[in-house]
Length: 149
Image (tube, rainbow, N blue to C red):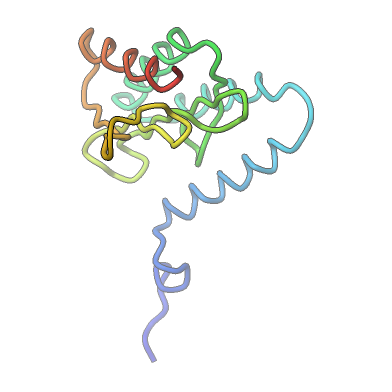
């Protein structure tokens, strides 16, 4: 009989992936409660950013500032434990995934299907972020502007 391990027992999900799914389940439960959801969402995003490694935190802070300045109509919230920004319908438009989340070599700025980035039959919905610069800030602002248009 083969030895059981965490990967086999959990349907081949890593411990980090299972933790992210648990966070998302908690987020969905919290979204069902009435109250100051927007303020809670902002605090959850700030807490998520604060828990990141210094390099990831620096990127996430700049992404947060850029997204909130470019698209003040998007509401901050966490999505699978990551900073995300949702439209008025509560659908995530843009999110940030830090490199440390799944031990990647770069952080990711991603867009969900609520983003208006369509360009023919194929278009990018995820961007690698290694370092922040004025050029990167301009590109992120352009992408967010397009996503909400």
